[in-house]
Structures are given as C-alpha cells and as structure tokens.
Length: 393
Image 1: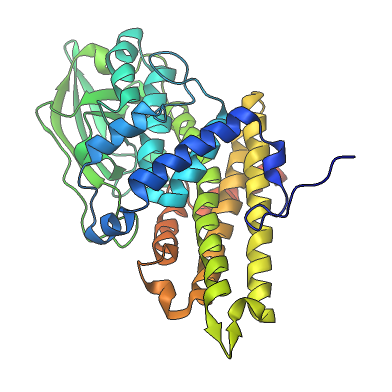
Image 2: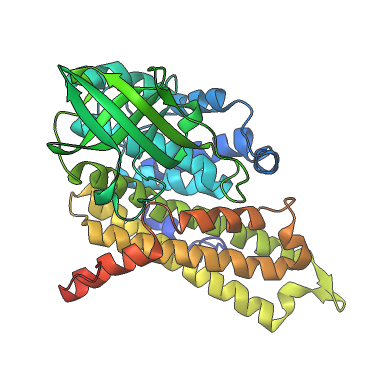
C-alpha cells in the first residue's frame, strides 16, 4: 500500500497528485520565470504605474512559449488548455497585470487572428506575436458600450476597395505599446473585426492614468479617426458578435485559473505571517479565529483550483461550454477577492503595505471582477442556462 505524501498547507487536497509530469513542468518553468523576473520588481512597477521594459518582458515571456501558448502552428507552443491555465495561475500569483498582458496577447489578439483571420494575416502577425517581438491589443469595449457590445458605436464603411474606420475604444490592455490592434466595428454587413497596424495614420492610443488597480499593466484608450485600411484588413472568417465573444470566452477561461493565483499568493502570505506574528506571547496562528480564517481560505482556494482544473480537462476534451466558463469566472474571482480581503485582516495594518502582495492583489482583482464580463453578466448567463429564460433586458 502506498504511503500518502506529507500534508502540504498550500495544497491541502493534494491536487498535485492528479497533475501530469508535463503539467508540473510547465508550472515550474513559469514559476521560476516569475520568481526571477517579476516578483522582485512588481511592487515597484505597481507603485510607479508602469513596467519600465515591457517589450523586454514580452520577449522573455515569448521565449518561454507563453504567448499564444495554447494555439497550434505559426510559432505557437501548442500546449494544452490545462497547461495554459496553470501558467495563468502562476503569472497572476505574481500580478494580475502580468497575466493580463499574456491573456490579451494570446487569448484575445492572437486568438482572433488565429481563429478568424486569413492565412496572410496569420503569417504576418502570429509568429512575431508568439515571440513577443510584436505586441497586440483587442478593441471591443467602448466608453458607452461595455456589457452591451451589440450597441457599439464604432463604424467601418467601404470606400472603393478600402475600409474607413472610425472608433473609440476604452480600457484596452497593451494599447499604448501595441504594434497591432484587433478592432471590432459595425458595418453594413454586421459587426466585423479589423487587423489594424498601430502606425496607421489616424490611429492613436493615449494611456489611461490615475488607476488604482492593474497598475503594473498598460491600459489605454484607442482612437481611430478616419483610419484607412485595405480590403484585406478585415477578418474574413466571421461576421457578428460570434467573433469577439469567442475571443472573450478564451480570455475568461484563463481568468478562472489566474484568480486562484492571486488567492494562493495572498493565502500563503497570510499563513506565513500568522506563524511569525507574535501577540499576547505567541504566534497569532495559534488563535482559533485566525485558524478559522486560514481554514476557510484553504477550502475556497482548493475548491476554486479544482473547478479550474475540471474546466481545463473539459476544454482539452473539446467539451467545455461558455456557460461553464461563466460559472468558473463568477465563482473563482469572487472567492479570490474574499480570500485576499480575509488575508488582509490577518496582516492587520501591514496588509495595506506594498511590502506584502495582498493589497496589490485585492486592488487588481477589483478590475478582474469586472472585465471579461461583470459579475452581473455572468450571473445572468448562468441564470439563463439554469432556467431557459433570458433576463438581460
């Protein structure tokens, strides 16, 4: 009879036992990169509101195969959905902004071109984006159209064989540093996606300042004033909301995993702090209320990670439904935020200091809670799936 392994406080259910060797190897590689390249600096990046060498970081992420890692061909790593999820978890354990950089690059911009683009668009952009030589962004959200993309005001019209694109997009990750933008706009044929090199005349991407969340991430507005594009700039394989929503589903899947990374980092910090912080002559880890907090956090972290793993296995079998992704994002981000808030209480006043990662994760998750579908939208998606009744309007 096999002897069970030692109890791991960071993996109380022993989830490691059901990961493959390849999955553990991917996780270890990403964790090592984060430990060397991100963790020592990310609090300063957050405080400064910028990553000093974002292009250098993108190339390092690309060299490890993390950009578009779940896509096949064109220089992409072709890894499994579960391996991609584990990478997202490790990246977000460092910072949500770093996972957002990878997620927007691979699951939004690259996926849109990979899934719906022409062969020429794929050959032109995907190999360079996979290495981090080119950075992409994804323009869907507008100042007055967030959860209701069908009512976007961005418009593209034909002018001879060209397209003329006028658009305003808001809250765009990577926008100010991107080399290419996938921009969605209304046309006479329906909603279409356009591959827009950011050096095209009429395109600008002013950076959004004064954020209190995702500060170690570039967030921008996209402004397209009479941008003239050739006929082959349009994504040829999709018309309608199916295009952007398919990309959002890919990104939401990564968030299901990533949120557990922020939660794990905060839980680990609280656990270590409780063991060293002395009050009334002994570590606060010895007090019942602290142990209750730690136990509750461990339970929710375990449940969320198991849910992410289950959805990853389903995605690898081609059996994952969008409603299930909504279930995962709704639960895991909500519970991750609660874990971070509880961890903050264990750290007391130290919990608001950037010397510890907890307040940074808390602030970041406030954005993650909203982007790629708000709590309300995922609740209604799940509600419609449960009842068969739409409550969106």
